[in-house]
Length: 196
Ligand SMILES: [Zn+2]
Picture: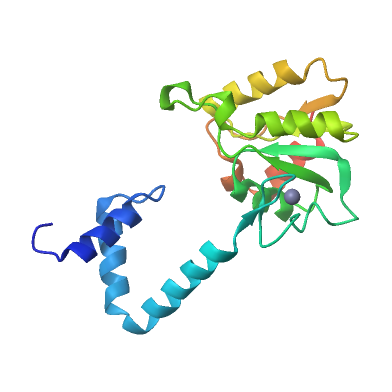
């Protein structure tokens, strides 16, 4: 947009980089924000604080503010069961079911050869390290029912096959194409309970 000052265009471009936001929405968000002057400062402060403080759990790669995340350092959680998920929001979805008392491992995405997302781009090596070092009894693969989710599940099943641990998957019932994050609690809870 030629008539806009550069700094506004730059801000629009930053919003545009976020998932699920196209150029129209990012423009609308920026205009709205700029008209709410009192909120801009708070927003900028929060972003800065998040940037300064955010860390990733060295064990499971969940977001944390320091050291191990709340889940990994909780003595009530079973450290011998790992639920493998693709995105941070999947942890939230599974926690809402109150059905899972193990720990997580965040892959940080799914395999997608077309986009150049190969196994080395995901936290797979780190998962194998955890399996080797800790006394892991079970790994639950809770990945999206998509092409990429399926490919990642297949890949993990293959490399975990000779590790002498139980590897299970969420039971069917999660619709084809569905993301874990948008699956309702009842479906997700029963998919966890009936895992195989
Ligand atoms: Zn953790």
